Image (cartoon, rainbow, N blue to C red; front, side, top):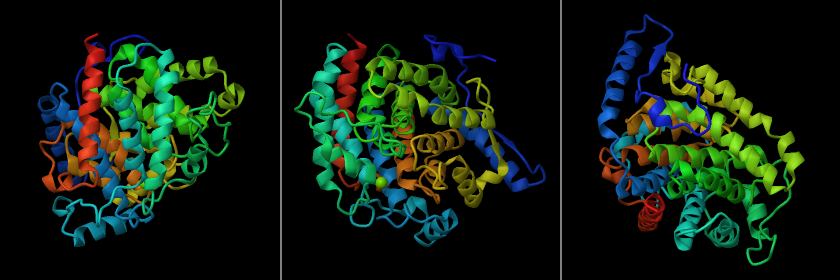
Length: 415
Ligand SMILES: [Mg+2]
């Protein structure tokens, strides 16, 4: 056991180790072979995840959009509730590697449009000298970008919570960014656009800043803990990916460090505190149950994956079991659970990540966006088929945000 305590360095505490244990039907030779292959792949991860470069930042933005475009498939796959059908259709299209993700057939959805808004706002603001400047400079800029990006939602299936609340923000008025607590604000719309916050604040010293920005940008539309804690998880995991913390530790770190920090922040911020605290336990409980199920509550054990979940139908059932109302990935808690599960299971295999995170019967574009960003921050573009990113819609904007966030974050690091 190696419990995570506040302020400790994960890198020092945990061996860098990425093995998966397969359990279940020991007689299934094919799956047993799959298990052995997984172990070989995971050994390679030690070599492939090098020091973070500008290319990793660009990959994080690009592959987030690739995961979104794949999971969306011009709205037909996002709203298909049968993962088996999606996988069958993928075969008829020639398989994953043959797909050319370009604007006409594979446009990006609301996830990427809003993620770009978050990233571009932070690049636009640049360096921030102290915590007070977050509220004075950064939040109004983020709100401004969110409002503008709502004009680019035609054909992109935006979530109704964002559609309803973002236009009400008033960036130029004191208090104009604060919306009321919303008992129905637990959707994944805050989380799907928050990864860039982790790219912006990738050092442990800036954890409080990361938390504040994730909470406040999240509750510009999703003022419910299940919604904005999804943003905290997405930003925090991206930051840990940049810090090269082993993924098996992320979940325990979320519960041990990020969520307590978020709770302190919400209490100190003083807006709708009681309503927030009353609705707080759901997110935390779902994450605690998941970590226990995978055997990684301690942050250092090897995750356990039942062999059965190699099948798309079994994964659909598992994802639905994590969800609030049966549509896996559509809430603030399970977008992170599904993306994280795919990261743990796929290791450095981009193909396996896509199959698990972006091609299933749930809210597949949002889980694909988050997982793609995390994967890109860790492994870069080297092993990715060029046709998955070279013709992506908004490619140059995505690359510019990656470059811009790398530059701003690097200045923080060397201050
Ligand atoms: Mg979408």
